[in-house]
Amino acid sequence: MAAMAMPAGAQEGRQWRLAALGTTPASLERVRRVFLPELARLGFAEGRNLSVSARWGTSAELAAQAQATLAARPDVIYANGNDATRALRALGTQVPIVAFGTDPVGQGFAQSLARPGGQVTGISILAGELDGKRLDMLHQALPNRRRIAALMYAPSADRQASERDLRRAAAPLGLEVRLFDVTTLEELPAAFRAMREARAEALLVMAAPQFFGIARRLAELAREAGLPTICEWPLMASAGCLLGFGPDIDDMTRRAASMAARILRGVPPGDIPIEQPTRFALGVNLATAHALGLTLPPAVMAQADEVFD
Image 1: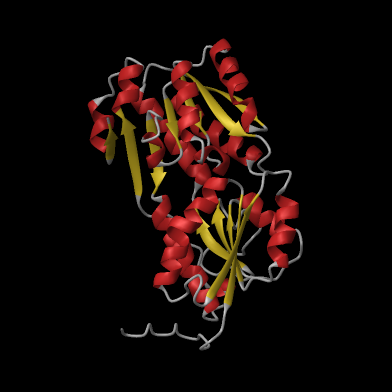
Image 2 (image 1 turned 120 degrees about the horizontal axis):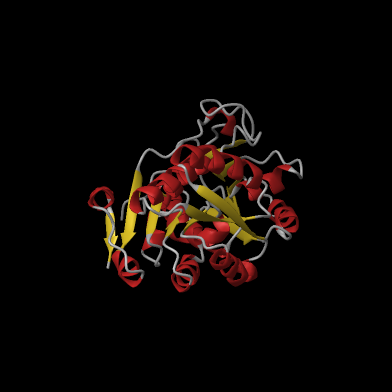
């Protein structure tokens, strides 16, 4: 059997340490399913020359989980979500961070996309811009529905900026947008009852890691409330959301892994440009459309990359 070549800049026999910190169990599932296999393909394999510690926490738990993450003395940290990155930086760590989140420059994590200049590089998922695009896509699918509910995760530090961007996108479309905040996922049934009482006609699930892992539950609640829903990621349509629009999350996770590999080879994170998604997809769930008695316009169906029956 041919021996695997050592990564450039690696030291034979050395063991590297990777830590992952997320805000949901789903974020760590993607670490195991996508991030680590890509890192292994690039020469850093768990159990051979890499040890891995992975943690997640709610907003109230992140500070403690960030401390535990740093206690593992990692060589690089993969932080899934702005709140995870913020919790790590609040502790004053200088450990390199590959961040997966929204607008790292605007958040103050980096100086610029092309040259971050500090300890943080990673993936910017354009959540604010894409929430506006999702609102427009929902309007294209349901042009006669004007009262739109927007479900938001209130504890996120990005909440105010998300609301500002959403209202800016709604104005030229002539849509009436009402926000419904949840601080815990246990509040979701009450939030959907409030949407019905407000006579909402459709729903935008705003970008938030906390919503990604519960797409099926969100789709069930939306269907019970009679609310056609657009969600953050294309594959959320497969879980029952009427529409799902966004980048390829697995592709971006692999790109984040390649950044971690470069850091382990000795490249400073501040020299690694922050990447943005370049490919976007629309998922459509026809079973959900049928259950809601909807026929989607041909122009919307023509844009669909994946159709789920």
